Length: 495
Image (cartoon, rainbow, N blue to C red):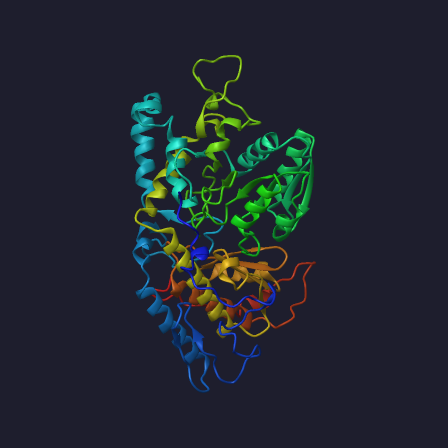
């Protein structure tokens, strides 16, 4: 049995519900007026019962000083602070950076290079083919899957690592349709899903003779009916960072007689997931974001133990055969999680992931979630205090129960603004046409990083006139203005 999600057990305090998902970035005290005032608003600590008042009419320097003191206080009290040393974030003597793109590609864990060196020079270079047995290569997909299992609330024997997220989505969807009751001809998909998930759902529908119906994720629970075979839902929306109700939607789908397939790409490793406790049927996820497995690292597939005997993969391969070296002409599936395998594992990337997971030793997922919420709260506070009013708009929910581990800000000329930030050592990303994304990975992101990012964003936007004229159909920061944007100095201890 997995640990229950922290936000459902009351371990993490809940802020007031937002009036709307799309609202100007507010200060985090609801009693403060929406419009900027001559006096600086109270700077709220994400922790309950704490606040640092800033009295009187003060200048920008005093505001920044108060925020810097607050960041230092939070970093000093951070129980995960030492985990940062397990990652390679700055090259000695090289440029210092603030890395807020772990929701796209996680940072390099320090233990990966020595492990891969050994894999290449000894396991491959010396042992060669003997390593399939002597070095445990053959069983690595299940062994590494069992290491991921606690991070997604699953018992051992239900997770297998291999293939890409896309391939695993396809396997999960088709298998779910084949397990669904007769007469169910509909696949529901999250209308705002990552595009590939939608493409694969259409392909699965063509293969199985079903149709696809796209509905907003928040409406899937009520949209499911007697025709629904399965629903494919993202746990966290990749654009907005909105966290969807996994237990509630799963329960609703089951009441309708349908199966649930969850995409955990933007939640696993950033917040508690309870697949077993919430009786999720199937789930998939990538490992190169918050699990820090490296670019293109293999994805994982979860199949609930009770469903494994009925899991009928659309991609049967010799690796998932009950007797893989028997080379029989007919396919007989293996038992357990192995049934989710297809072909020969990508050993180098798989073992890089194995080494990357060492960074999680002694780390509790509820602590990760607690820091994630504090970081994103503090970043929103810094943005509200420093960024020119009206220049950005948060599309990430304020409610903790509805927020993943990123903050997405609508901003004119988002692409060019992010390029300016990156050139100054503050790395996030953007999604067209106008969304800046800042990902907060609690294992290595500091509160000082959140403040530095807000400072950089403020500096870029202060140098650009409001209402930038679109250039060629894409809003952008004019090149002439670009050169005038002041540099944000990444001081020691802030990158």
